[in-house]
Amino acid sequence: MKVMLAVDQSDCSNMAVESVLKRKWPQDTKFEVMSVFEPLAMTCVGWNAAYMPVTMIDTEQELLKLRKEFVHEKVQELEKVFGKENVTCCIREGAVWPGIIERANEWGADLIVVGSHGRSGISKFFLGSTAEAIAGHAGCSVEIVKGHQPFESSIA
Amino acid sequence: MKILIALDSSSYACEILKNITQRSWSEDTQFRVITVVRPTGNYETDLELGHQAKTILDDRVARLKERLKGVQEIDSEIFTGDARATIVQEARRWKADLIVLGSHGDTGVRPETIGSVASGVVHDAPCSVEVVKLVNVEQLQTA
Image (cartoon, rainbow over all chains, first blue to last red; front, side):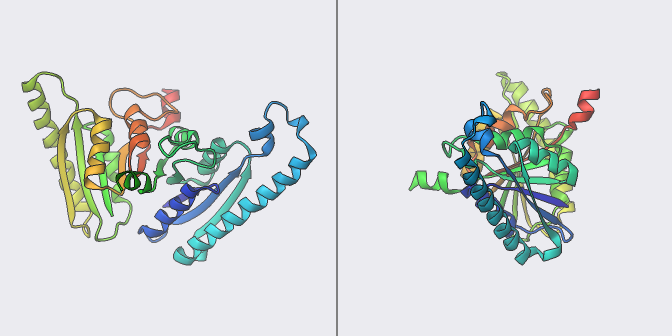
């Protein structure tokens, strides 16, 4: 079985990784931590990448570095539990959900695990657009991880 | 871990169960399999539909029990009502850790989207949701 974890630096991604770590998997399961880095030109400037200020290029590099560190940290957590030979990672640049779907098809994932809302999530009560796009376009099953927190804290 | 499996009476349900039986589950995993029947407004018809759904569900649960040998706790129930609301409500009441359901039911399929029930449950659910992809999008486009 092949399980792909699509992460960004959000809390939901952390929860997604934790839920995978807690569960029991068939013996020869392979894991891949996958992250798509969206260039700032796409998220902030958008209308014309040629006008991107020079200072933003530094910011972008810094963000990409942080993303790589995050992914490697998650890979190490998975390696501790499932063994080095079963965990790989992949970082790409571009639009998020098409990148995730493309990689999932290429690698032949049986399950994609994603957090319910990523970095641009407005509220805990709305599902991220990315998670829904992944669920719609993927050729395999998709698990959308939510914490129990929103529900439990509303009772307390 | 508590896993709520929502099935309809369509043949897609077999795919979902196949998906479940292919994994390994720890022995303390609890499964609850439910089917939600949409009410028609006619009491006798509802009763009949409920009975049919129960027969189908019992058969599927029996097969699931056979294949998941290590797991002790599997129970099932039929509900009548709105699928989205009922599944979410049951997940809350039972404190499920994961809801497993199909991407589409038997009421028609559009490629590259998930069905309204799946989408609604993902939005409202208090826990994680696994959407089992039941339709091969490429196949559908060529058909």
